[in-house]
Amino acid sequence: MTATATNMRVGANKAAAKPRALIMRTDVLVFLAFLALVTVGATVLAQAGLVSVSFVKLLGKTLCLCLAALAMDLVWGYTGILSLGHFAFFGIGGYAIGMWLMWDRTELIVMDTLLRAELPPTALEIEEAIGTQIFGVVGSSDIPWLWTFAGSLPLQLAFAVLVPGLIALVFGWLAFRSRVAGVYLSILTQAGTLALSLWLFQNDSGLRGNNGLSGLQNLPGLDDVPQSVVSLWFLWASAFALGLGYILAVWTVSGRFGSVLRGIRDDEARVRFLGYEVEHYKLAIFTGTAMACGIGGALYYPQAGIVNPTEIAPIASIYLAVWVAIGGRGRLYGAVIGAAVVSLLSSWFTGGGAPDIDLGFYVIKWTDWWLVLLGSSFVLVTLFAPKGLGGFVDLWTNRRSTRRDDLGPDQGSLRAEEETP
Image (tube, rainbow, N blue to C red; front, top):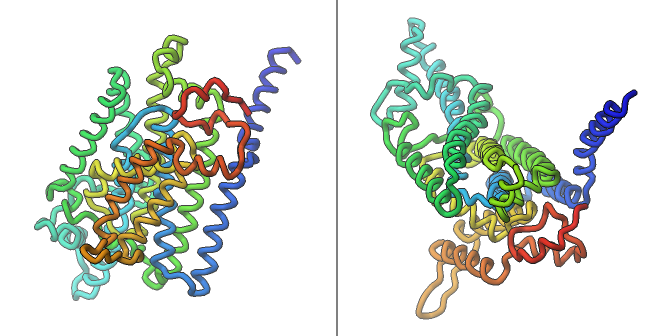
């Protein structure tokens, strides 16, 4: 065997061993173990009747939001691209799966009604009845072209991933090849998201305008299955997606690809000078994270029960950036912690769980003051704790050395002390 062949074989063995080594990393094992503990614990408590169905759904939705935050951390915390439109990809994934849920459920209802008639219905009558049921709320019975494949679950699942990826690919190719960066890119992503949400608000968009898609919690053909069981299905699916997404994210930032991403974040001009195709790396991470958001949205909205244009408005993407900042950008576990903490606290404060505070001259109602508290937390974290909540994890574990793939963009002087595991 030649030396070249030997080297190729050794390289292949190292490449095959790398994913296994990543899974065996302590931080990955701890994350997966904690995720499994939460999922199994919630399942056991739900089966025992100790937690409600709504709480199980809240956990499932929180895991989906953690997946979106993980994607946002890759594109912002590791690559330095502050995208203020990434939650739009999350909403697109929800619309894609929501179309199938509405179509199939409506088709079952229509068929059950029409088959009771004395004469069997024609294909045109069935289509018109479905169109009236779905689009009657916007004063129409015509089925838009967007719904051509709405009756196919495999295609709609593919669209939930491919449509966000295609939009991100086209947008990123146009923006990155034009060397748009920094605040200008953030404004551009925000403007694109605003245009999309305004289009969806129109009744002739084909997606029911301001009404959005509703009743998504009812799975077609499974009317006999209680929501207590369906919620557990989605909880496990969300946990699996987040666990797999975390492993892929760690794999992405651990090798040379991740080093180039951090180089782009810290000094894009120098990376370009070294001969790397910066645009290709930025486009790859921008497109990949958009597809991850689409998966998260496809799992989130059947648990939420409704998706409408407000989910794609720019403010939603700003919230996503706030979660990552509070958790600690540039730290994958930090992004997950930030999204989980803010999501659960938001539900507690806005759902009436937090008691009002009577000051005598004024009553603090947390349903009104939650956004003020969230904004204040973002400002305080930015000024006084740039490592976010993830920094407390570092203190708790008393880490003496810093993994290169866990080091955030803050405190640039530490980059000279980075170590490769």
